View 1 (cartoon, helix red, strand yellow):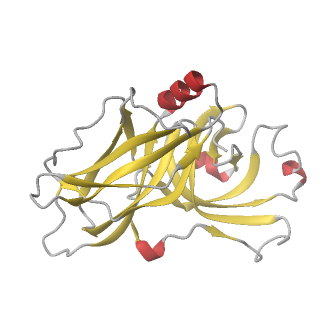
View 2 (cartoon, rainbow, N blue to C red; view 1 turned 120 degrees about the vertical axis):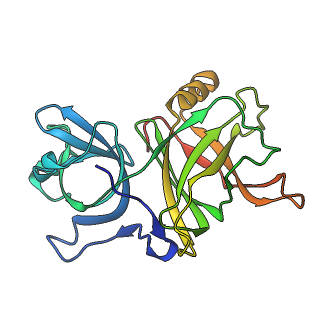
Length: 253
């Protein structure tokens, strides 16, 4: 499944409570939610792992054009009042939901490198981020982040990478510093003046999480993400800005 995931800043919705279908006391509709697909799961076949550790599926979803391990954004509705969902899906391994396949969009997956990027130099094609949203999720080893970029052309192609220094000296709160960089890999159309875009990204940080939790005997991983927000006066250096502290744990909750 391939569908470009770019959003105008004002177009991104997060959570919508539904009172249109079913019992409004037990039914919930979630919009633009992150998920990781798994296939060949038990008797159902295809399922989606979502934030918080829940697993959802549906009969129609078995025909969706998705791959194992694929990171996605999508909308879904779930009725917690259904008898088959009463146990949280423990009996059959998933909860039954209505998955709106026309909203399924693939989120590009990128790597976390355990060698710190050269933070003093500007890379060829270096892109600046307007901000990094506080919204995030950690699902099956994938960290979902939502970057915002101004003047982004619709057809422009970018690549993203996270890096960190494995030998960094931590403060008392054990907050790690990660560095996020974006590089333009293909130009957009000349007639396109660009606009503000939200670009979701998924980073494989499973090894990093295992390392931190193992070395520090903790269930939580805390980190800030530093991102290029401006160029220095000489245009050969980067002004880095730090996000708020993100906190995740291996269960994804």
